[in-house]
Image (cartoon, rainbow, N blue to C red; front, side, top):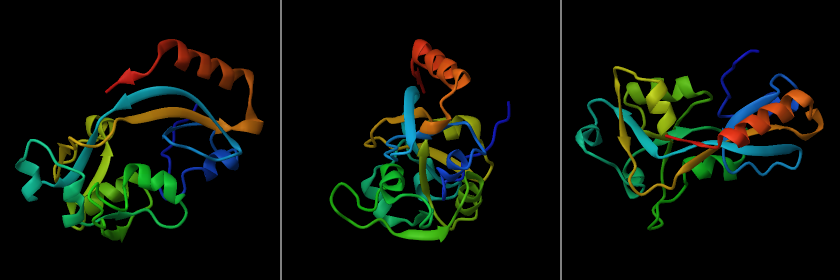
Length: 176
């Protein structure tokens, strides 16, 4: 068994090429060649901000406030519907959320945030697993819950994948 990082700028290629068998991805995933299995985790969302950012000292942030900041640009390799489910292009009141510097991986996003070049919304699991001295994670109080599900290439169905999916379904989603 091997664990690898899903590349945010190209989230499905590793499945399609067989480099990975199963990925845990935020939903929605609407790719005809991929199977979405059970949801294995759900949780809130946080805004990663530089430690010295004015939002760092607040108890929460809002989606509307994203229009006052730049967020990382995951580029054209990630389907817009998938990116927009995490990083909307507009706020609830219709204000445009400006894109900033390009980032291909989660760790590049963290580096850009720590350098003060952008802020970026993430799932709460990211904050739990990735503390960083230059970043504060502020809960986004008006963002919907983020479901994470098992996803695999439909033609790669196997007894091991089915067993993993059954186990995920039996355990049910972990609430973060």
